[in-house]
Image 1 (cartoon, rainbow, N blue to C red):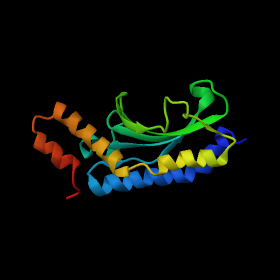
Image 2: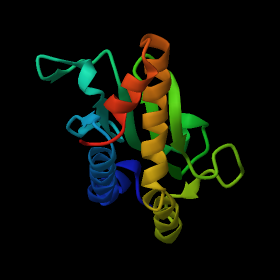
Image 3: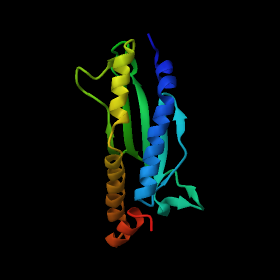
Length: 165
C-alpha cells in the first residue's frame, strides 16, 4: 500500500506542471503576477497578486490569492483509513474562498483507496483535467470584486486585471 508521502512523491512533478500551466494562463490573460511555487506538507502553492499589491517589486504577503494543490489524507480529514484525494484550492489571503475542486467531496466516493494505484491515478486525472481557464476566471472575478469594493473607478479595475497590453 502506498502511503501519503509516496503518493506526494509520485505526483509532485505533475502537480507542479498544473501550477505552471495556471501561471502561464494568468500571464497570458491578465496582468496578475504569480510567485514561486512553495512546497509545504502534502501541498504545493503559489501566491497571485495584482501589480498594485506589490511593494518595491516584491509580493505583499497580506494581499492576493493563494492557489494550491494538495494531496488529502483521509485519516487526517475524517478518520477513514487508507484513503486519498486531491484538491485545488483558491483562497484569498485572509481566509476567503475564491474557488476550488475536490473530486467527490462530501460523497461516499470522496476517498480513493491508496492501495489501488489505478483509482488514485483516475482521481488525480480529474484534477489534471480541470478547466484552467475557469480557475483563471475565478481569480480575475475575485480581483474585480475586491477592487470594486476598494476603488471608485471600476474601469480602472478592468485595465489592471484583464489584458497584457
